[in-house]
Length: 294
Length: 317
Image 1 (cartoon, rainbow over the protein chains, first blue to last red):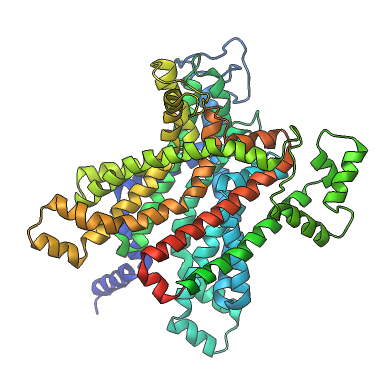
Image 2 (image 1 turned 90 degrees about the vertical axis):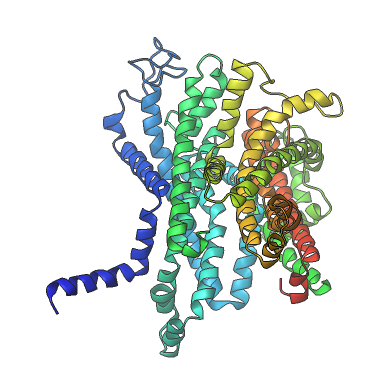
């Protein structure tokens, strides 16, 4: 066989891999690609905030209070004369950190519980599922508000509250995946060979649940960003003077007729970031699960 | 049907018990003496002693839980630290406001979502489908408190068309009440509209593929008649179920909407209670909303089983 045909064969095999097929399908979705681009842009902005922001986001300037957007202050200034653009740029940090860490907390809680419930069934399953039902019964934001209030208002506590409130989705999802994967021949074979439970769970079952978990995690980041900004808007999340989009909107409410720009840009940033994560999540779902591509 | 009913009811009971344990545990996890927390500003030793006795705070934790659960089961959710009003009274005083807001927002959501979902499904892959899908995704992504602020900015501050905030009971001035509620209802309804539209689109697509719809089309019935008379009725079933599951989401959304438009409802009650460190009220509201969600979901499931014979004859929960 010539090297060229060997190469072609290798490429063919490669493109038959599920992950590669998913990538091919994902690439055909322009909206999802744009969304991924927007997310990367926000991440870069959040990381490079100190270099990108034209002013110190916490520096008040009482001589330029509530100035409309101008060439000096591109997005205007706030009630104590801080540059809105710099605050919006730094605000990206709180939102992205909150989105990602909350989902990590939810995954750390949810995935092991879902694995145990689905794999061992019986009483453990019943107990975990009833606990999940109970958590799901609390309206998301009321639970997060109550937890953030008991733990004390801070970004960290908001993330813990959001993580706990979103964990049930991952418990249910992982459990469902375990139930469907468990019946597969290779899992049965591993069991027959006497492989221990932990190994089966981590090496065989978990990898087959990664795609739906990734999709759900992406969509939950969107939810978590809205939840963090909601808590900060209520005064239960990021505390001033640290800039956060939700917190900025809370202040802006008092100056709507005098300084509307204070309300427009932080909200627009939340909306764009969340929309990008939702579009990316939808794109990933369609890419991983072609059956849903009506 | 009876078996299904009993099984479903039996799964709701442990869930409710776990909810009470969680609410109780969170309260007891708070740093500080629970008697002092429940007493709030009140420093009269007699009052503190009375609280200690009622909730058996000197006894082991499981006795405390039992005492608290007995109180709760009798409908006693304690008293507000600030106003000394019973929490149950406070909740029932604010609840009608939130219920009206929620019903209006459901109406807004249904009016937007059902036609949009049908159009998107019938004219699949058309410009209308693309636009309504993108609008629905926007509805899911827009923080409703920001949407509220933007609407106030344009419709109240700029155009002076609608009042920016405040509340008048419907029984006192129905027209003014609706005028003040329409913006909040729209804000609260957008997220729900997005969820319902997506569900309507996908279940309509599913139904349109069914044989009986093809038969109706083959018989030469007009396209509109097929959609409205044959497909819509069946496509609506999952949409109604989803609507039932969104009640918790509506209550969460109400917390923010009521805050933005200064509406004295349930959501405002819990936020104000958090800031006043009125733990009895926070605890009461959390317990009440969770219980209400469980009961509503139970009713939705039972209604669904009653409407859809395949479920109850199957006998699986």
